[in-house]
Image (cartoon, rainbow, N blue to C red; front, top):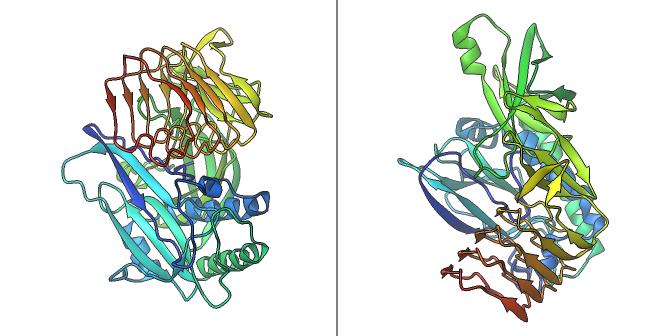
Length: 421
């Protein structure tokens, strides 16, 4: 998965000085909703919204992410002169985006808006090169049938309105965007190349590998693809790399001027140039064995309750919790993080609305941006004695009562406890 959008944290792959940027996205003037505060549960949609959320992110991943700047303008027309003021943010999309990464020279990041017929608009955040899509949000025009939301209210009429709008967006995409060929489920591996027939006599070669940069905690696997050709220039020009965290989620890509979609599934045991990589389900925790023989928890799928992160799995140390690993897990009530953990990713436990108690071990040195944002019942936190920094929005929206901050903490960033009640 190229991006994590439920409080999206995007990490650039370039060296430089770390930065964090907080972007407020549009919201309908009639909606009385905010991301931080009493309505933090907004980012945890009711079950009725889940199919819409899946469909929405499928459209973003497969139809928008493969585009470059020129593709966007060809499909949607020129960008708007100013951002629209009559667009509603879908209720299942976060009302804030936090971008985090590195500053590089000649940085050309920028945001543009485009119309989607008379249905809504598309917001594109372009990456450092000013051309690649880094993130995207779809909005709906707040027409006469728009139903206003108040804080956390569930509204069946709003659900039906959004369902109809999303169907219209998909139809518009099908009619106006380049046609996309679905390659289906493709088993990929780092040990051997996978060959996929693209049609028209073209064959795509696929290999995967684990990104060895430890700071790239949400980009665990990279899908490397190129045309099978003896023409070196053609092969180089066709090369595409797509990041994904969760297998079995579709991705989109462009190759040889055509657009494709596939759903990667990993051959088990997964092996790349660094050796065997195993995906393990340990007590509801999906864990990946990294190239340097340690383990990262990438996703929680368990039944909730009191959760203890293991110090080891299969005899290897568990050292990291990935970005968004426990995000929106509303059945988790407490978490114990052992001393073996040295890194907790962005938004790792955000919007865990039943979480009340957290113990952070002595291996962690930083509590990162929005780690516990929107944990609306989190009252008790014990922080290990090696933590040096608490970053912005780490505990935003948490009603903390018992918080133990050790002497090792030397810096607390602005708004680390913003919205605390």
